[in-house]
Length: 432
Image (cartoon, rainbow, N blue to C red):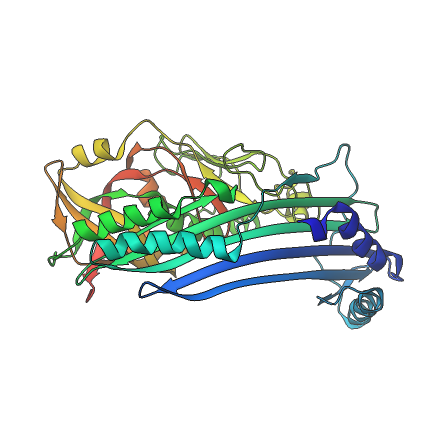
């Protein structure tokens, strides 16, 4: 991102630090340039570009802290933001979990991994070709083609400064027929590698296979979950279950289970910002370096997410909040998973997932955009969507086959495989 390279980011961060009168300060800068082409009923509804940058100043007098943010980054506005943060800190009660700024480390974690972004015209042309595939099959197309360039910088009064830049592109396509919808998506880091037509083709094929779905009784079925469905449940699992403080205080399903086998041996889940296939920012918003952490290794819960405060209290190394989530893959192809399923369901993705009982690791949600009955090792036909009540841990404990990892995820970057599991609980039917 030429407007927010290391030099400019450091200049803005330094302008805040140089104005500080408090005991300690952390300054975070986040900048984004984003282009989005959205479409519905086979017509583009938005083709927009936006750019913004914001700093957040955290000032501390002892353990009294105050925060203020602004996207007005001229020197006078930055100084005003610092003064507001300091004023808030002076009237705030001491934070019992306050930690001083991260000290500079040996080496520089700053990274730049950027690629050119397509123009609005190029995105619109790609969407037009994708929509034409749906129209040619008698369907309508809807979805989005989004590209973005991101820059993050962290600096503090201890002398630390880190900078990170990267790009990514995402495409999602829904092909709608008279009584079915097919969906597919892709996520890449080099926008030139994204093929919206290939995404649309998969969605059209899914919609064509999903015509005339029949009703199916809810119950416990074997499942073959595509990568997007796996990622959706894993995201909720990490949000509700993996915080070490919550676990140690007895507030999650995983309380007391560290070091125990909790899922099938085929399951290994980890984070690694240096991953070649799913790279991510190698430091936290505090500037804490991130490295590879195994969360679940061959079924064993090996680590939990440790803040600096809780790590110090527990006498352990802090992990920081991960910037990506990866699950190791296996050699099973989708055809292998289907062939080994006596009677089950092939799930494209989940939708509207919510936590029901975090202490039981129980979630609810619906299938969407392609649900198919499998009988005697073959796809027997489409069925109407179902609502589920299921535990992510119990699902992972029932994993029998694991496929090849794929880039996915909507918020945090994820690379996870499709899986085949022996049981999944569907509780009711939907109306679509």
